[in-house]
Length: 325
Image (cartoon, rainbow, N blue to C red; front, side, top):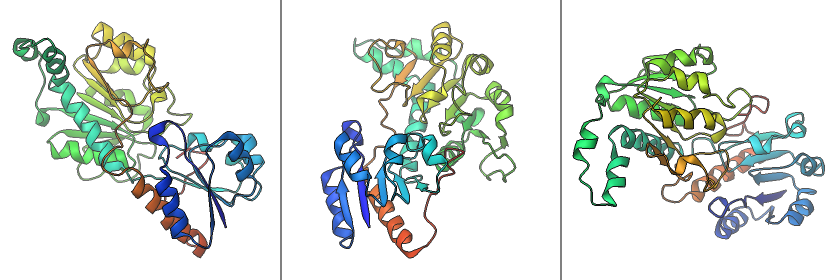
């Protein structure tokens, strides 16, 4: 079986050579090939049985007639789902759950930092300014008097919800299938059609939903307008879930108290973006998933799925290609 590894995007999202070597060592009966450059992708995809990657173009997929399964090293699989893949029988899996704890911790850290004014303290620290009065003037309810809205209840969203509940917050969730039982640590779960209702009651909002056609610009002007002026928004999902112009206008006008953002439409975030200069924004450079060794557990999951694939067993983390997650 030929396995092509093509995970070479930004420097931090490129799989180390040592992990490719580990794959090859663990699969001595298979051909494991790395395809970094465009010409290597074209050449190697043609005869690949399995693709371990983050993206594929429609024309690349059409030119790879032997592909039977693709596994994403990430949770988001949009770049692996051109129309040609969606309409094919090729199975797609992802790395859901591998970094859920790290991402959830990061989300809660951003939420607490914004609520407690730690970004203000850090900014004033550079000028040796004692910001006690400035921070004291902000009125922020303690956790037990606060409600958090978690939008998206996959493995990451559920972990965030459990952590917030552990801090004493009331937790409301939003998910597509609201008929599922409400987790014991949550107050209620709303369908997407009631998103604005949830936003209106929340002291903090955390976006943990996948990027799909339905979630594109999920937080637009009407949604931002529904939020409390004292609310904070945290996005550890995808940048395209947010209408940037609407959010920036609200942050500038005091429509909401602040935002902690770990994902953006364009990355790296361009220097001209207003997010850099807004004092009530914490820019996190897409680092929520980093904790310890990023790649080892991703490769371990893929190896487990290779074993399952060969044995004809159900694969872990299958993706509904039409839903996009």
